[in-house]
Image 1 (tube, rainbow, N blue to C red):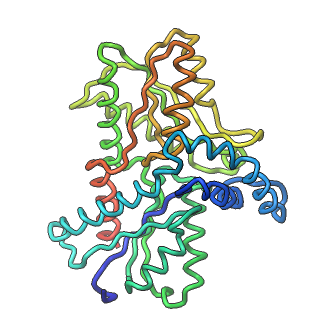
Image 2: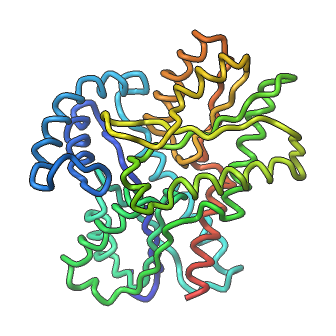
Image 3: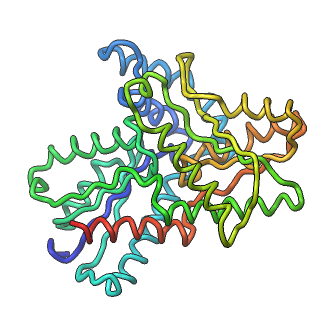
Length: 337
């Protein structure tokens, strides 16, 4: 494909182990990233990461065994890329785009790595590229780390230095995204029948040290939740009054993390007499071990023990509404540049 024929779109995501054997090296890659967690002085980051990955690998493999022995995030992100490429190319005439789109996937901590995606982009002769983070809420630990790795990889490839690049680094308040998630939530709420569930918006936690340094992540989460609650009160949902809370999951280690934790919040809701809870994995757009195991199994078991009917709102994954939302993100970015 000639350089001028296509606009590239690179989807950035976390990645996950694609087999039990990949769990330990995946964990090592994850904990080696100082932008996501700081393990003592900088020279000790990789040695400590090696030790932690060795210690945690067995337990992590066991958790993955409950969801098929591997993370589904790689396959889901690939499917999102295929669906996005299809809708972008099917609608480009309507949007007056003269060139086709090619969509790529780059993972931060497992294959296909961001550097591998850049190799493919180079081979395809892409001269204009939209880099889209699949984390709606910006954090240095997620989008920031992925963009930094993209730029480091880009610097090593001289024949991509002239590429025109557009970055989409946050979209927590993008109306089509809010609409897509609101529809998922409303459908999940209807499964409770006459019972009015509490909405528990559960997001991946963040070390408080990053928050103190000005990371906007918790404010982005708060804004998304406020917009969702407002959207659910409007047509066609008209959900009415409901209780809702924000909690945080997936803490690692003993240092201070953003809270309250999802587990602590579930226990508090039980003590307050709530018997129906819908967990909305608000910071995740694709299913992964946090949604399928941590929420779907670990938190569910806690809820059962404490008399709570717990359900998990399905992730956006490849829903038509979500693919349509990220299509609009791309179209707007290309059209505004």
